[in-house]
Length: 497
Image (cartoon, rainbow, N blue to C red; front, side):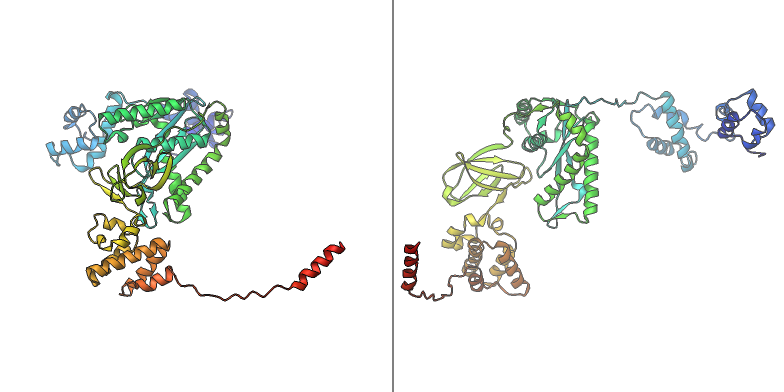
């Protein structure tokens, strides 16, 4: 059509059907244009030349020498250059409307005159050669446990070739204990081990460690890899893309979990164990999709050693007269029968196991606090026997608040406000005794809450009779005398047989 430029598509169509100039009509061009194409078959896009004249004055002519000076500053952004020249030359000379023009000119200048950019080299992952590990913050999944926000990390292990992966919920930070425990869990799930184990610089794991502790971490990490016959390697500090085969999958993992949480319709879980099962199920689904590749890789992986190596931190401490033991700035209560003994504590990421010699005597949740603080993990069941004999010790007990579970703190506040000091302590200890001996901590807490909501104090005597009944109804049982005639009949039949 007159006034329209011929397109590359029209030329292609004409060239494929040009035995007759009548085909030019089908291509939407004139026969004159067709003869011109026959003489010079270049595409219209190939004939375009940069316009050598300007249709308007260059709005950057005055400021461009200054822009080139600023471009010599490494890492400077286009918006920073724009704001700088606008401050120096004024908004009249550099109005907001020239910003996009300036950014395009800077981009072109950098393409023609800028320095070298970093190149990302694609890698071929040899089957069975490399496994990768990393920790990734998962707070943006917004998971809650029993309604409480659950900030946590995920430990992530992956085979570079087949993509088999395993993940574990980490309650603390990047520690050797978490790394060792969850890495070994992953290897034993896989059933084999790769030749090389790749990690980042693990800078977060070193964050609060002194020089000696850092050396211990390194030695332990190397010993762990040596136990499984893996060669440890690390990428350069602060260069995450060198570990890209795990960094990018970290994002994929959290994206899959986020989508699974959306399908689930809720991000709340009754317990941490329920959430862990959810993560395991999602990983299992993904691994099933890669089953063929994983089977091929397993044929060349290394066999596992006969047993696991140490996956905990060992701390030894004495049980004090208070029936407590201090481990990693946390005071844990233990049964009073262990007072005076030395226990060995195995610190895992989420729990602490206490041993007396070879015998495990107790397992409890691990408590974590900020570096400069101290905390308590007190189980009232360990102390209730002595508190019954000395109920007044409750009032000024150092770890009194840590002693109360669930609604019991509210019960103590109500009793202490309404009763005299001695009676408040006796009633509170009686409630704890009912909870301990009746094995009804949660059920009793509900009854206490209901009473307090009605503005009444819990009735200790009534609760004790309900949860710790001592009087049982007697039922008279009458046993009739035996019928000897029946025995004689049995004996007579036996003689006949």
